[in-house]
Image (cartoon, rainbow, N blue to C red; front, side, top):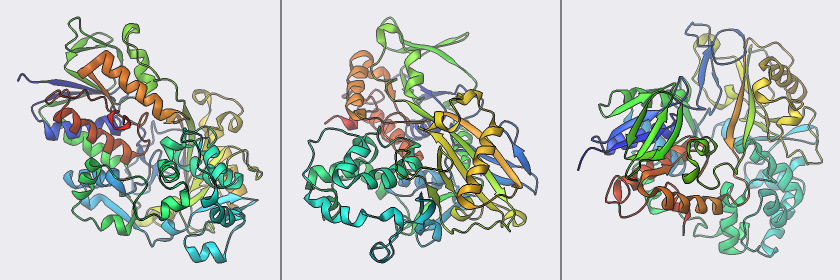
Length: 525
């Protein structure tokens, strides 16, 4: 067989992971990784900054003794499931063991979570006894709704919003103030728009299998079984107990350690070429239909297969009219202002936990600083990232906007928002919610445009239609991976890229070609 060439579009964590697993498993396959920006890693962005305010990450790199680590994107990773196992295995393979930091499940940041409700920060129960004996205001009516939920008739099985599902099975309060807050933390999204089937599948599956969420969760057999291919990844763990004892893990120099080391490893492989700052203009099938042609400003290249790891909305304009694909632009993506702070140690942070989230804006509890999604107490959540001089500083990150962007910043478009405005609004939030009014020693503000895809109701059925469309129009020439499709977290992205590569090499375009692999095969019954 002649040497095959695969182009991977996008150098975020999905594209890097696809290139990594493909190069490891098929070192004779020629891999071309193309990234439109000047750096790889996508939304993973860890910055060491000097004292003062920084309006963006463009000129913040610091290597002095007086610097501090700020995360613009993902800051910690969960070790659970196949995604967590895949990243742990990847980190071991890349020899990053000495760079890793682990937070125990017994740590206060793992046990203590908060929601702002009714004018105060409420500590969420973390045990059955605390649920029964010390209910915060945000848990009013929750216990009653849990006890009555098993007697609620099951729904039709049609996809519905998280809000619709939870308010139907529990009550409006739980849907808006608890699930609405969790939705802010994961998706910066609107629980009234997001699909229960695609964002909190375990709730949907519990109702389908047991007629009740509570009954399903108490059942001896899980409502959502782990697929064999994912269990195989979990079984590879050298230290399976790590998932039992660890809440989250990270890296001494931030999550970007992982993407940087992936890049370094790939650059050492003779079958991999990484091209950055290169904008693709078009991709199309060749006249004979046997390969794909990728066009940039002043060049073109033919490849045997394209893995698209860019957002679906960015893939759409690259396709020709005759071979356009359905549903690539249906789901919106939200904008988030991320503002990092580090204060001197005398700042009084009264809470020893991970951070707090805010309810859905339709809650009866209105936010005093509208548009606040939540605040992470970084210095509590991850230890060991600072030198001795700055180890006692109080670090936190304010997230604002998301699905509430227009109300947060008065309709100003994200590309027009002055980071100083975001900083001032986040500073106000810290003052109102936490009583912190001191000037930070370090601070940074970034506006992340269209950073988190929103899996709105009907997402899974639309993916099924997209899967069939790719099969029909591109056959063995195109597959997709990334946060637009089957999960937005870093572990999800790594896992799904690995599974895609495995399938392509087994019975797909890079293997026997028995099956057409699109990257979306798992959602087809």
